[in-house]
Length: 302
Image 1: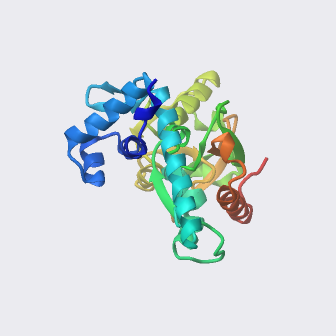
Image 2 (image 1 turned 30 degrees about the vertical axis):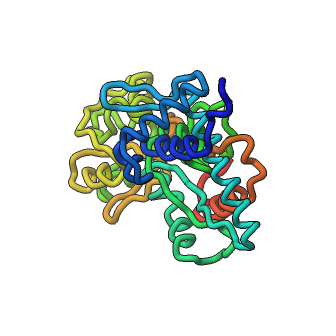
Image 3 (image 1 turned 135 degrees about the vertical axis):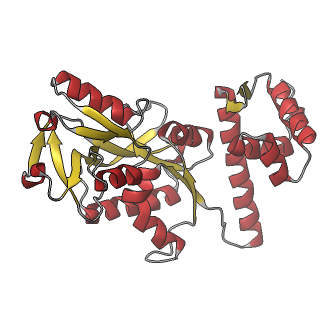
């Protein structure tokens, strides 16, 4: 490997490319031509002797080596920014990048994000940059260094990331307030027998877990409709399309109620970050704020 050819310019360009995984948008942000960016990325890969991304149709994904290089490039960018801030006697302004999905932003992180973006409560909290993505992309963003911190439901803990349990919520059944099952404080899987359910698409982990539990309990049920996202799920319930099994953090909209269902696994929300970021005071500050917010909000903590 020719380390002399490993330029900081190429690393900085690759960091931008790794964030977008799109040559057009990356070149526009860098204000260079697409061919020039292709040359930079290809020369970097040649210098390292490893492919940094792969193409599947029109979709680009980082290789394992690409994730490592992207993480290093972003860390280098942070160190340079910190160094320049120290020399100039100014405070570093790089935001903390938080990656999470729709459910986490809606029901766990919303109040905290609003307060930080409006500059409320605690001036020590770093400015935020948000990424909205599914669980797989959240983990990928943390591994590649694109995100400083990720939040999501994890049934299996990754062995290459540091994890912190934030809260665990039981599964609940959401239904109209006048539904016969609404009079009970707690339900079992058998209570769902014969009902039409609003569920996520079949590929989603939540759908897989619910179907497996209902099958094991020999419960006969009907799929009312598939819905992507909790807000649309609740909307279909309010229309009378069917009942919905959701994570317990999901707040029913007016006219609906939620009752806990025994026999279904809880949804554990974790915060994840790279192990070498454990001493980063910005991550510690945000984690502490999230945990305090959830304690106030009443999440089932373990």
